[in-house]
Image (cartoon, rainbow, N blue to C red; front, side, top):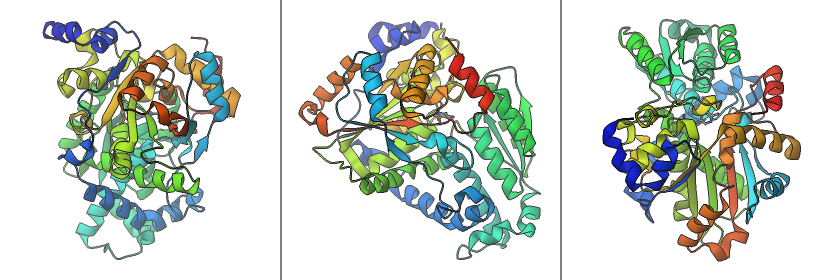
Length: 439
Ligand SMILES: *Cc1c(COP(=O)(O)O)cnc(C)c1O
């Protein structure tokens, strides 16, 4: 362990737990009422801009992805109540969950089957738009359906997109870039599952494998890309574009809640549970929902005990200045979508005034939760996604948080949303292995 970090272990109980690989719950004491209005790094205009860009691309997406026919080119997932899962959780973890429990099924997002279909696809579209506008081939007032024409494929074919990934980001960037006609290289870390590499290769994506962890794959990808003037690097460690793509989830969620007549206000608090890897997805979503629901929404991140980089970064305030390895943690987890050792350089700072807390969970429990959800609701989500239940099953800490916000009396009217971040693209034989894993 890095010797200068001992003082954080001595001072902050959640950091001490994390370093010992114990499940823990960190409450963010820097969260403030109205904190969303203090954020300087990004602004609500950017969310609007991202939302409008996705609308411009909708006719194109509808044209090239048949599964988007029924949503008119909008990539969105279902929000579903999971009452049986709630009862199962209460029994299995001897806890009481007050209010309604729902699942946000990004596990079934069209095109790439994970939350990365928000940020990853958005960033590729933005880059494609920038190039096409710059070349004069596209005007912002055009119907973007024309992007499906061969002349655009030919044009994008001169350009390259590269990304480092543990799997799902590579899938969304790879699928979208290849569809537009770009050359794509995905740099994959050792944690990435074989089937994801195979699937990408089958779509014409070049996959380069690394024996090392995620940060090494990203570093090599960035280096490769920087040497090539025609190459664009999707930088998960710093990307604002990814973040803004995720943030659009806020307005989409609002519409879905309204449609299902679920209130969110002073008397009806909303709790969101977001699995966190490098932080872009949960950070962007949290930012987006905070812009809409303000202090009535409470956002928690969840991480595997072996890859709790955001907890360590935020609790120490060192952010990307610290990695799990610096604390002697190996970073190895079956939750491949969350297998990140060092948090984003900017997300932790952005969410500091708005994040409620971070809970960690052991890999073994992820499989139990996965089977529980399958059994109770007949919904399959991948193990990484199951981290979404980590905070919910920590009754005592959640009660303390709820109490500290004066919400105890209102909890029967609360809504909890576990954000299922991936699953539908997992092949049948992998699902079977997951179901039978007796960790
Ligand atoms: C990427 C991913 C996350 C978290 O996103 P980050 O931007 O890395 O924090 C959560 N779940 C799954 C399944 C993912 O693939």
